[in-house]
Length: 148
Ligand SMILES: O=c1ccn([C@H]2C[C@H](O)[C@@H](COP(=O)(O)OP(=O)(O)OP(=O)(O)O)O2)c(=O)[nH]1
Image (cartoon, rainbow, N blue to C red; front, side, top):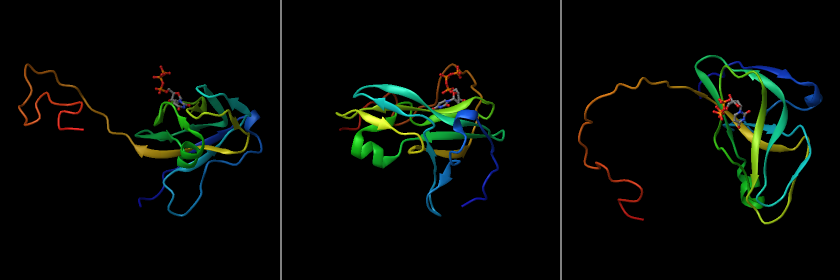
């Protein structure tokens, strides 16, 4: 495991008193993040859930917002845009876009863990336009071309 990067965090007024995102175990890849508001999601409903904080990620890094597997399996709750991308130049409140893919209403409760945040290095690219691309065995095959 590489040494942790330092990310500045600013608590917003409606997030006062809530715990910062934190690793649940020594080996956890993601910091669990808690909701800063109550909201009930009907089946099929989606919403951007407040977290009550903002961050300044060092240049060259992002934070990925990922679902929690327990909520996904037990209740059908996922991050609709998974993995959500937090850009290093974003200074607004982090929000978690939850969707209820389950059959029952799901109550998001302030202070409960709703997702996890995974910091990651960013690899940028340049696009260099060419007349033709190099040949490969796959060619244009895709979308199930190798079988089910
Ligand atoms: O799950 C998410 C995804 C994004 N964001 C914030 C941080 C991110 O830096 C910003 C923009 O996200 P993204 O680039 O995914 O959104 P967009 O639809 O392309 O909007 P924009 O035009 O604002 O970039 O929104 C969140 O708080 N939670």
